[in-house]
Amino acid sequence: MKILSQIFILFIFVSCAGEVKNTDPTEEIKSLVPATTFLSQSDSSSFYDQDHTSAPDTVAYVGPWTCKAIRYPKYDSSISISAPFNSVKALRLLFPGNFNIWDDDRGLDQYLVDWKSNASKIKFETNYFGEYIYFPFGKGNETRICDTLYYRLKSKEYILVSFTSREFEVDGLRMGRFDGAVLGIALFEKQNQKWFLKAFNPAIVYNGSYSKACSPELAKLSSDEMGYKCLAMNGGAGGPFSAPLELIIRDSNTFVKVLNLPYARYEFDAGCSWKETIVSLEKEHIININLKGSYFLEGFTLFDNIFIPDCVERMGKQRDSSAFIYTYCYRRDSVNNFKLVNEYYQFR
Image (cartoon, rainbow, N blue to C red):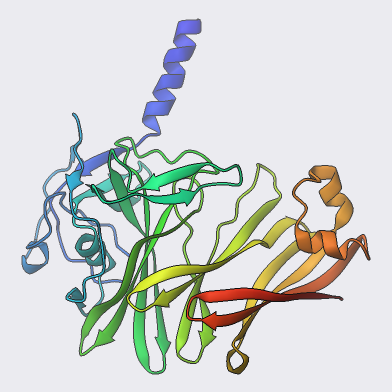
């Protein structure tokens, strides 16, 4: 009976794993977000110049897998994509490794590039306990499209494509609530029916969960500058859930993280939750991050009094519970230098 139980558990594990498939393409994808289509694992240099009218049967991958060795992905001003924009083509141009289709057995096809590089490692802290990863991973990396955002700024059109990279695994499992991935970002600007690469950084921060990085959101900093904020919500089963705010900005032809604010968003119950907004005072070179919501001090002390957010601890000296607006005031001294200069709050 014990042996049968072990076999049954193994069957469930394998059946949920999905599989990597190597196929030929059927058609070019003409949308911001990739559609379901078959794409090849081979080099993509001539793919978009061909006419594909049929798709052969897919073949499940078996045998040892070797990630393609490439130069470390970096900004290249010569990269452009003809309109309409194609996020899958952006993935293939910026990460020119082996291209694959991932079938997660739910009818959802996802695209990934596997690659490896001998470039110098970048050190990322992965959690609050002092654990680190070094990117790119030595055995190989897999990179997927995380999200695609379109916006206008001073009559110019932009598309921001974000990428999530993790250590390559053939089984494709995404396990671990607190295991994230490396976030990369590319910015394209439209000029004369073409989208030109204006900035790119394949590895900015490590965040997210279940081996996927957090999709960035738009945060307007001035009339001619857009920032990008990441809020990777996470927490134990049943909550509470919290997220630090990581603010990313463009610096010439790359991207950099300029600030990290813990507990910028918090969700537990109706009496203890808040969200953030960013307010830019452009003329004063000031950026305010306002947290608006409510707290219940006893809820923190009953759950875990070690991780009480600083803002709640400060307000809790006056009131055990209240609706509030808490403001963190940052002064921008240079392009990528944001300094916390003041904190204040008001009860509502």
